[in-house]
Amino acid sequence: MELRKDYFADVRKDGLHEIGQGRPRLDSPGHVTGKTAYFADRNFPGMLHLKMVRSPHHHARIRSIDTSQAEKHPGVVKVLTANDVPHNVYTILILIQIGPEDETVLADGKVRWKGEAVVAVLAETERAAQEAAAKVKVDYEVLPAVFDMEEALKPGAPLVNEYHGQNYYLYDSGECRKVRFGNVEAGFAGADHILEQSYQSSPIEHAPTETTGCVVTPEGNDRFTCYTNTQAMFFTLDNTSIILQMPGSKLHFVGGTVGGGFGGKVDVIVEPIAILAAKLTGRPVCFIYSREEEMQISSPRAAEKVVIKDGLMKDGRIVARKVTGYTDAGAYSRHSPYGAQKGAAHYPGPYTIPNVWIDTYCVYTNRTPSSAMRGFGVTIGDFALEVQMDKLARLIGMDPLEFRFINAYRDGDMKAHRQPTEGAALIECMQEASRAANWPVAEKYMAMSSYRKEA
Amino acid sequence: MAKVPVQFTLNGSEKAEFVESGATLLHALRDKIGDTSPKGGCHQGTCGACSVIIDGELRLSCLTLAETCNGAAITTTAGLAEGGVLHPLQRAFLDAFATQCGFCTPGMIMAAKVLLDRTPNPSREDVVEALSGNICRCTGYEPIIQAVLTAARANSQNAA
Ligand code: FES
Ligand code: FES
Image 1 (cartoon, rainbow over the protein chains, first blue to last red):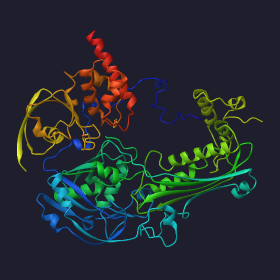
Image 2 (image 1 turned 45 degrees about the vertical axis):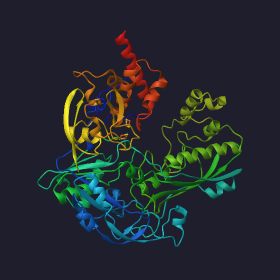
Image 3 (image 1 turned 180 degrees about the vertical axis):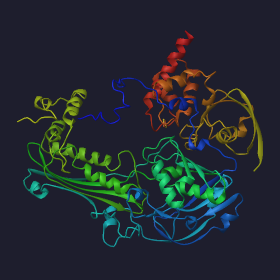
Image 4 (image 1 turned 60 degrees about the vertical axis):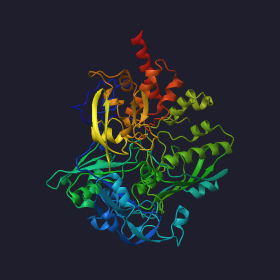
C-alpha cells in the first residue's frame, strides 16, 4: 500500500519507533487517583433533577396529559411537555442530509415504543422528581403494535411511524440498499450446490458502567454549559441547536470523558431536554439515566435478520451469492438507515464472488429504537457470513480454512461494488492464523499470495 | 426530611455533615463532601464502582446509609496516594494498562487494596475472587488481575 508522506510533510517526524513501545494513556493518572472528572462529578448549588414519565405501551395514541397533581407535589419546580420544545421533531442524521425528521423529543399525540419519553419533571431532589413523575396522568388509547420485521413489512401491518409513511426507510434510490454484480440467477443455475440459510440476532445492550446523562448550568447572557458523556459532541451540539432553535454560540458543550460508550452514547437524547429545562427554570439541571433506564431505554444494537443463498461448485468456488438483510430500527431511525447500508456493502464478505445480489432493508417496528454499537450493520453480518462459510465447506467435505483460501479476495479481483481489490492481505492473515492456531492447511495454500495469482 | 448528624474520618481527616435520614454514603461522599472518586454505576449493589473501605472492610457505598458511619474510618481511592506518590496499586494499574474509561478503576483499586492488606501474597484465584464484585466493561479483566499481582510482588519486595 502507498503511504502518503506528502501530507503534513513539514510537521511529520519520520523515524518513529512507536511499535512495541509501552506508552501511558494520557488520562490514566486521573483514573487511578480518582481525579478524572466525569459529568456527574459536577455538582452545582440549586441543581434540579430531571425524571422522565415514559410510555408503558408499545404503541398508543395520547388522548390527554394531566400534569396538575405532579405540579403540586412538594419540591417540583417545573413540568415539561411537547408544547415546551421549540422544534420537537428531529432526526440525528439530518446533519448529513438523512431525513425525514421522525422522532419527538417529548411524545406528541402518539407513543411508538414502550419507554418513550412523554413528560419531563423537574424537582429539587431526585426522589421528589420520581414521586411527581408517578403522578402525571396520561390517557392512552392503545394501538396494535408490531414487533417482527417480516410482519411489519406485510401489507396492512400497523403503521409505526407516520413520518415515513411505510414501515421501512425509503432511501433516495428506493426501498432498500442494493448491490448488483454479474448475473446471480445464471450463477445459481450453473452451481453444483445451493445453500440457503437464515440467521437472526436479538438486540444487544452496551451496558456501559457509567450511565448516560448530562449536567447543564446556565451561565448568564442566555448561554448554557452542558457537561455530557456523549460520544458524538458535534452531532449533539448541532442537533441541540436545531431542537432548541438556539445558535451554537449560546451552547457550550464540555465532554470527552466517557465512562464506557461502545456506540451507545452517540444519540442525542438527554442534552436538548436538559438544556431546555435549565433555560426555562434558570437553574442547573441534572438528567442521568438510572441503571434500569440504561438497560431498557438506551438504544441497543439492532436486531437483524440475514438470509443468505449461495451457489457453490464442487471444487470450493462460490459462484453466486444472494443476500437479503433486515435491520430492526425500532420506532425511529437514529443511526439505523446507515447500519442497513453498511450491511449492503459488507455482505459479499472478503471473498471474490462473480455474481452477487444484495438487498438490505431498514425496518420500523414498535421496539426500542436501535442505533450504533461497535461495527453496527456489519458485526452480525460477519457472524452470519462466517457461519455460512463453515456450512458451505461442510457441504462439500472441505476443510473450512482451505475453503476460505479458495475464495479469499486478492489484488486485482473485482469486488461486487466494482472496486478493484488493492492491498489485500487476507491470504497472509490466514496463513499466519493457520500457524498460530496449529490448524495446518495443504502446502499449495501456504504458497498462495494476495499479490499475485498462480497460473 | 429529618437530618442526622454524622462524623467520620475520610482518608485521615475529620468530616462532619448533616445528612438526610436514609441517604447513602455514596451520596454523602460525592454530593456533600465532594470526594467523587467513588462512582455510581448502578446504585443497587451490583457493579462495585462505588466501593470504599470502612474500618478495614470493603463496602458498597451505594448500599451503606451515611448515618450508620458515625465514628468510622473511611478510605477512598482519592486518599491513596501519599505525598504525591502513587500507591503501588495505582502505579500498577497505570503501568499495566488496567484502566480504559476509568469508571470502574477506583472501585477496583479499593477491592484490590482490601485483598492485599489481608493477603500480601495472593494467588491468581485470590485476586479473581476479590475482584468478582466489580464489573469492568472496557478493559477486560486480565490486565486488572495482572496489575494487582504486580502490585503484590512490589509490596513483598519492599517488605523483604
Ligand atoms: S453503584 Fe454501588 S455497586 Fe454499583
Ligand atoms: S475501564 Fe471502563 S468500566 Fe472498567
